[in-house]
Image 1 (tube, rainbow, N blue to C red):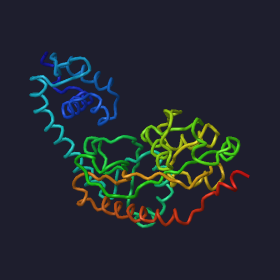
Image 2: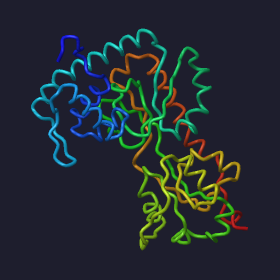
Image 3: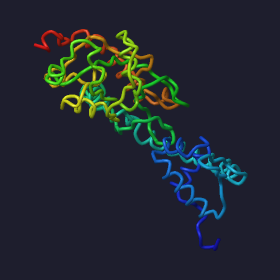
Image 4: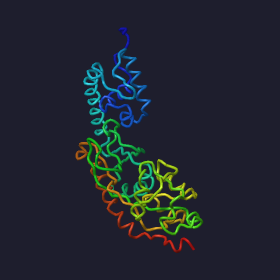
Length: 315
């Protein structure tokens, strides 16, 4: 290496390398840093080329740190952690009333956004910056104060504040339901079923809750976001299982209808996931108190809403 060459590798490559070293997986590292597995692999190849030495042993799709990689990770990881800590302290000093929160896209659009005027009214000094994220990641590494998470309280190195469980209901376009002669759950067998990618077993569980076990293999179009799923169902592409709180506008307008009252519940739930040390961030404490208060109102809201009776739907 020439004297004039700087001894600081590309930061994106270092970040990908440390994530891969921590998880022992390029795909898990990609989920943490917001890149695809192949993009992480390219970043690490750039770093290895820059250092002129391999850092991982590759056997098929499996990768493991070699001795040089382990030694390098042991030195680089604490340095990056110190950079993140110093950056976090500076940002905290510059904006003690400012937060950066990641939210699930459909949750953010349909539940969170309509309630933000209330947050502003209660905390006019607070500024919250939102970004859409669909999968778990490292809050510290990504520079977020908190995130909305659906699942189990298993996000590493974070505090979980329970918000609520979801109740998924079966919905379809009223004309589709009428023309398809859907009068009981068994009538849906063989009809187009729409799936949400993070709930692949939802239909099997719903049919089981209805007492129907002798099912053929269930398959259909799959959508990543619930609002895409709702639009497809409203257009007559089939029926879908969607959390009730996400589709109130479609139900109220008549774009979607619920032919059955049978809902699908889960042990998984929505959580506000907060970074370590959240207790020392007044804005994060206030935001947590506010969102927990608004989440507690959800059951009461659901009780007040009406369900379209199947008899009226099928006239």
